[in-house]
Length: 421
Image (tube, rainbow, N blue to C red; front, top):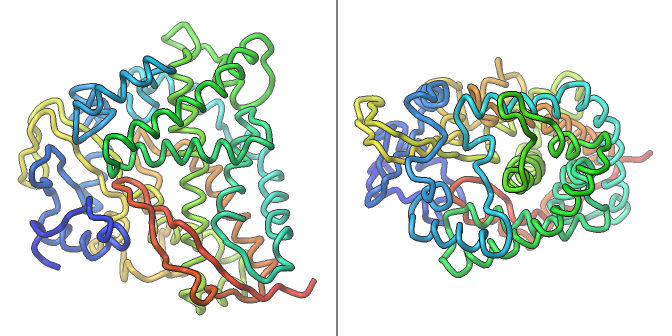
């Protein structure tokens, strides 16, 4: 595949394994305008970094706010906004969708909520839950790895921090799935609005929690978000801002992405048995690099958006004002110009953490430390509980959810030999 004009990143088949398409774009059209759209796709590592490090030229706020709701169809964006206003709360711009000074002020509050001491407090719970989840099915010799492990580990952790009842976790998963599909840019309008309705259900679930915590603050993460007065704003987050953050930055940002990395890591271990044996032989030495390599090779967030408010030039291409810049982390993380043998899972890779899976610059993912802890304990539990594992014969099609932005394996049925304990 060498002709960029033949590449369609909206094609679900291309999304199943986009890496050949990414290579062609990096080589032939590193700043590529998708025909018939205002979207410019950026695929080389250095260009991605340039965009992320220059919010003045490539801001996070859309030229037209309706573009934020639907980057390819502003009329649909208007309908989405109207549905939220009528039935729930119109989500305000999230942290990722803001520019300074508002971003910096809001980020300071989030930095306090996710400070290292708080992550350290959560860490023992992550460790305990990882082993508990595996121990629930280790005697069966088989599992749906995604549903029985990858989903509940980060979901339960962030859910507990967000004041949700353990009994409600799978209901919440249904709502986060709705948000996941709503932002996929792959749905027809009726299904898109159906996802909005499910997200509004979540808003009505969390609204009483916000109101209770305003009256009776506690030491949970959500209480910090509800009650902290943001310097420069003179107030805490309002309901519209809180509802936006609940879905985008806490539940989907804080669980869905880690779920997808846990699934990707298991698939890679089964496909690369030499790496599995290497990891198992010395996890203290190799685990950190393994986690970084999973994030680099199968970036859960394949891409996000920046915008242009004025004409800008990148690699000789003029990107007009009012355009959408699609920053392809998944392509940058396999750029041969930066990573030697980029398609290889290499536990000896130098500077393995140099990938873009968590973004870069002022919008670097604030949940990255927690995600790394969840991935580390998740795979440590695998090392400690499994002697070996393999794909369940005839039970996997290895398909990914259609999505323009995220990479999410639908299911992964595995069988395994448990370690003698």
